[in-house]
Image (cartoon, rainbow, N blue to C red; front, side):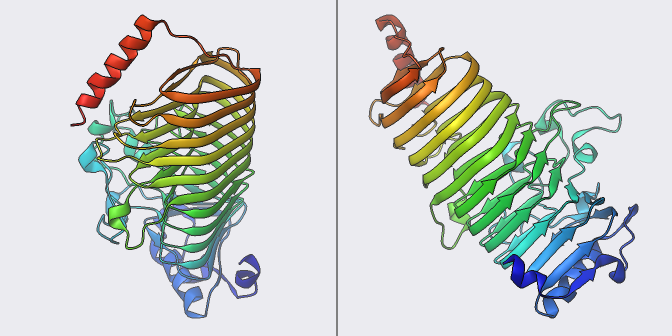
Length: 409
């Protein structure tokens, strides 16, 4: 893919009138360069050093958007400069759920083949323009935000995506959403949403939804919300929804105020995913396996997930739970070669009707151990003891779970 694009002509956005001064709105110039490259059969659209204020940019087939050293695409502070929620049938806005997102994106690719975003430059979502009020103070809740764009970089129904060597920063919502795509390479990126000067509500890193053959390698991710998620949602918006499967994450250093890695949500299936050589630091929960966050009728089945060689510094190593799902099945999940430090025991809780099966912990060195309810856990080597529950405590947990489940009906 890289060779094919690189053999085609390179076009500079400056030749199409882009200013790169951080003040002029360069959306039309950048889009004109993309469209011109597409008209000639594809090529590299190059942004030299500078700050390019922009609204929505639509990528095309066989296009590499290349940000040179010192180049930044910065999101416009005006919501009117972004695409509408109904721009594509696959799009959705979650404002109705209290997130107050518009459905607009900064970079869009839908139904494309052979497309790339490369660095070493940056894409900056300008989160301060949307998350802070006129006095520079964070809105007190996401419901209080008047409006903000949705996912900063959004690909749907694409095949052959390469995101490499680029910095993705300061998204006002999720950073990069990969929906129902195939053959995705994400390498050597630095991804961060603000979590220290202020909190980015829903400030995820990479959200991989119903996508297959995805590689994430060599990335550094520091986010206010989930760093990497595997999802099986949005099925009703897609003509041919697929499972989320064959996802490989390796050689990454990640840190999150919430979940470093989250697997789950939706009403489909997530399977055949592999995590290896991961450093998780300064995080709330290292791994969160959850069937459904909302009151859905089904939830997501999760099986055949393998995790190897992970270093953990987090409040909690693992939470594995049905939550709002009534029927989802979890099985064949392995953690091998995990070490580090946590402040809390891991919690693994399933409904009695659908217990978690074949959960294996091999050479896990986390002495605080775990608490399990309705789950088959096999511990092989290491130090990861089961914290035995008293009959009274187990009964109370099951009563609490039953009361929660009653809310689902």
